[in-house]
Length: 253
Image (tube, one colour):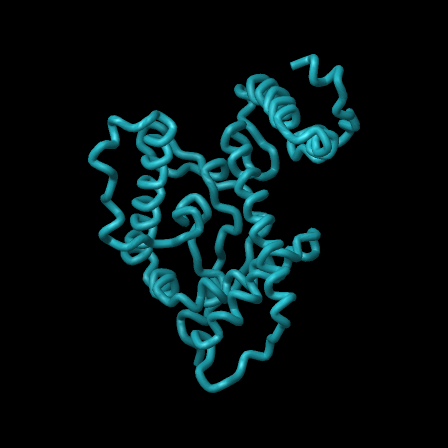
């Protein structure tokens, strides 16, 4: 007989605020979009936090850190103050998500409390990424599995083994990948678009103008030998955009 945790369940694969519609009057959820990647697999494989409730991927904070903001918050520079407030909100939101699971979705709550499941879910979710050309995140997930193998099995040796040079190379590649991904997320947040590039129709012209400005500013501030490449690989552009970075573009700032 299989346990409750072995029964396949549906889980939204890309839950973020652009995919959740809420009635502004009574705050009831009216619809959730983008279910096309949904899988039916057990909690042990796909338990985890929605990205916007994951505390920047760190999960639940220690209780003593949840309600802590500096006493001199109001005297800080606006950017620093905003950064601390956002981090504070992220910590509390993640904690509330866990508490809500404890009340309304106990099986998932139990899986969240088992650290091994987040490692297992990470490997499974990353396993499909090489098909999209993303091998770096999958390799890093494998290394995390090796480093935490005792959580999976105490009486079997890990079947995976890589040389010290391979491990160092993969970790460095992932560090660079994570930095690039963080920058991409920051650009999306600045522009107010989701991962597919969608934006509310009433904000389209404003967002498009902001995107053009941001592309010029980021490229212009880069090292001269990198400007052409940054302009070419800008992630938010039309598929038929084959323009090149040159002095005329720079003067058009």
